[in-house]
Length: 530
Image 1 (cartoon, rainbow, N blue to C red):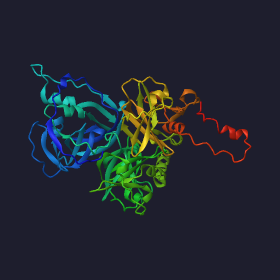
Image 2 (image 1 turned 135 degrees about the horizontal axis):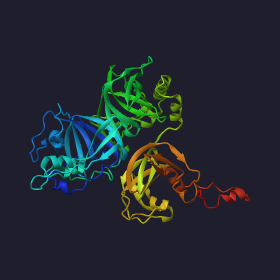
Image 3 (image 1 turned 90 degrees about the vertical axis):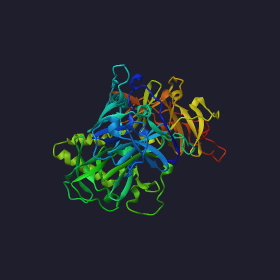
Image 4 (image 1 turned 135 degrees about the vertical axis):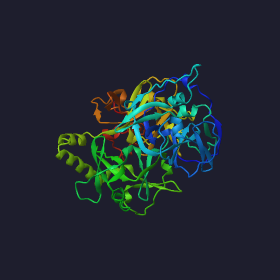
C-alpha cells in the first residue's frame, strides 16, 4: 500500500438505509488484526491504507457524527478520526495511541485504536457469518446508533487462540453523514494498487525497524511470559506457547548480527513458519504497521556487508526506513532450522509428541496455495508462483491466440505481458462477466498474467499427485490436487503453463550434409505432453 501525497476533499457519504441491506458474508483472505477496547477487530488487508501514531492533540473538526473526535494532518491531507467507543460501543480503553487509516475505494478515514495485533489469514472455516438485525423504534424506523453498530459487523472469527469480529468497511463508509476524505488525485496511483504488492508486517526490535512478508508468518503474538530455553545458547532465548504448541523464541538482533535483544521474561514475537513445518518465534518489541509493498518500492543495499547480509532484502520508506528481511532466506536459515528441529525432538522425547508424528510432518510438509474461482469451479495455485495480483485490464491490441488461451497483451512494468484465459485453457464455460483479477507468474524470465474470477483464500496443504497427467490437461499441467476443509482443489502449475507457451528454441542444424533421423526429428514442431 504505497503512500501517495494527495489533496482530499470532504463530503458526507450518501445515506444508506442499513436495515434494507441484506447481510453480506465476510470475505476470506488476509486481514489486519487490531485491538480496541479489549476487542480484536479484523479488517481486510486491502481496506487498510496505513497506520500512523496519534498526535498529542487532534485537529478540531465539525461533529457531523458523534463518533468524530477530530482530525489529523496526514502529510498535508486532513483526515477525520473516529472514536471506537462511540462507533462500536466497546469499553473505553485507557489510551488509543495509534490511528488506523481505513480505505473504501478512493475515500479514507481514521479510527483510533489501542494496538496492532498482526496479520491473520482468515478463511471461511474460521468465520461465523452474522445476521445482526437492525433495531427499530416505535415508528418502524431504524433504531439509531445500535442499528448502525449492527451493520458494521460482518462476522465473528476464531483463528487459533485469537477471537474477534470482522469489520465491514463498506458499511462504515455508507453510514449517514460519515465524513470521508475523498482522494481526487489518482494520477500517481499504479493500476491495481489495492491488490499489488506483498503483504508485509513491519515491527521494531530494539532500535531496529524491520519488515517481513506475511506469507512466511504463522502469527504475531502479543507480549507473554516465556519459559527458559532447555539449552545454554545465545540465540535460543526461550519458549512460548501458541495454539497449544511450544515454539522456540530466538534473539532476533543476534540472528541478524545487529546486536542483541534485551533479556526479559516476557516478550512479543513474530512466529516464522519453516518449510519443514517447524515454527520459530522472532523476539520483537512491537508490531508497527501492515501494508503491501511493491518490488519497485524496495531499495537495494548495494554490495556493502553489514550484519547478516544474506537475510536482508532491502530498505522500504524514506523518512523512517525499515529493513526488509528476505522471506526465503529466513526460511532457509540453518540456525533457525536447527532450533526448530531441536524443538520437535525435545517435545517428542518428553512424550508430548510422538516421534512418528515429527517424522511425518517433515516428510509431508505443508505448502501454501492461493485458492481461486473460475466460473463455478475452484482451483489452487502454488503461492510461491504468485508474483503479483492486479486488476484485469485490457489493451484492445488485438494480439491474441485463442488456441493457446492468449486473450490479450498488456504493458506491465516495462514489457509486454500476455493475458491467459484459464477458462478457455481448462475448457470451462465463461460466465461472460469478465475475470476481474489477474495473477502474474514467471518462468525462465517470461511473465504471463492468468485471469481468474475470484480470489478465495490462502490455504496450506500437502499435495496429492495424480497418475494421469495427460490429455486436455497438459497445457495447465493439472497433475496434482490438494484437499483442505473437506474439499479437493486441482493445482494449476502456472510455471509449467508458461513453459508450454515458451518452448526452447530448436538446436542449430548439423554442419555436415548427412543428417540422421535424430537431427531430422528436431525440425518437427514441438509437441506438448498429452
